[in-house]
Length: 276
Ligand code: DGL
Image (cartoon, rainbow, N blue to C red; front, side, top):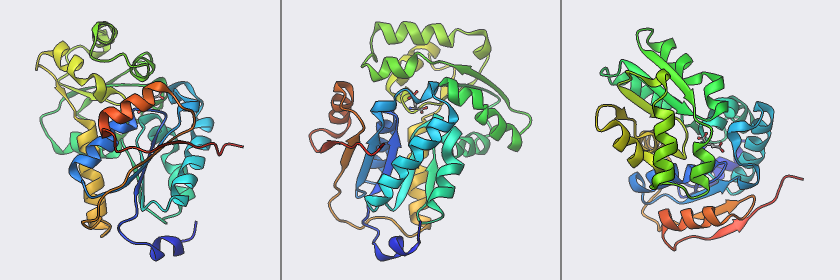
């Protein structure tokens, strides 16, 4: 990827964001709150959802093709708004992009937050099978602080449940409670919801722990990091009216509903098929 293209364009280029489905919308929404002038191009890879069960090679392939698409949309930054893809494909995407634009994953900003705030001692991590199998949170946290205890639990039913629209109801409460009651998570003082779908069930988490465990607001942590990088790179948008575009690899009712839930009616949703 040549650096020429990024030099030709301005700070008013959009931020590219992707996930397997609606999860990354929690990140897009948080970015919109801290950076209201920014335009967004969002890609939900609904044809390949869930990412949590796919092989690392498949995730790398999807991530590269989507990044290629986002660069073609003239994005000034790529945010991998998915923990599974961040765990398995971040280095691959960075190599592919070759420094043309900054690439942000959703794991490093959260690890920075945990390390910076000294009050965390025993941290629970919940995420997809892919994220938990990679053990990336424990590796990254313990590489910087050996004293922190990190316990990880795969919670594979959660992302498909949320994608199907089951949140803030009795089913989401029951499924989540059954996972959070696992012995692996007993005694934690902090929970990292390590899947971008999970902020949609944060009220169920708060209800379960009744204030005894800090639930990291991962979307806000990532959004603030995006702001920091754009500022450092002198890429913050000017006071132009922001314009968002939403693409999916397959139309799903839940994606459309969730997009409208976060972005009201200001959406333009298109199906994009570039796999063959
Ligand atoms: N939202 C994603 C994550 O953060 C992926 C969920 C899935 O598709 O399995 O891992």
